[in-house]
Image (cartoon, rainbow, N blue to C red):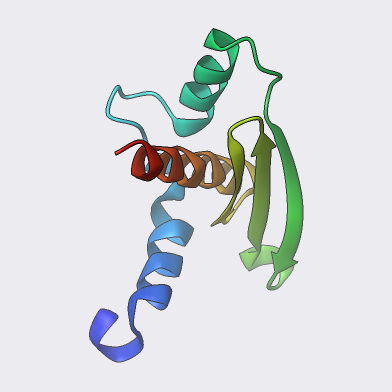
Length: 100
């Protein structure tokens, strides 16, 4: 896929088929980890919002945006829950890059 279409398409394929299995190193999903970080810092809970839906009903691709005190990120997935998990994972990855 990478050779034919490049990284953006590879990313979309991985998100579409494996987003629900994305977990943090501790084995918890990213939404749980993000929530725990915010609660530990006495911050409000994150807000997840569907910002786009693409495709036919039987093959939807959702885009969800997560917003919290730590920032904002978007994720995509075949369900709202999967897209939310990916958005949280994206935000955690952003935070990791900025703290390094």
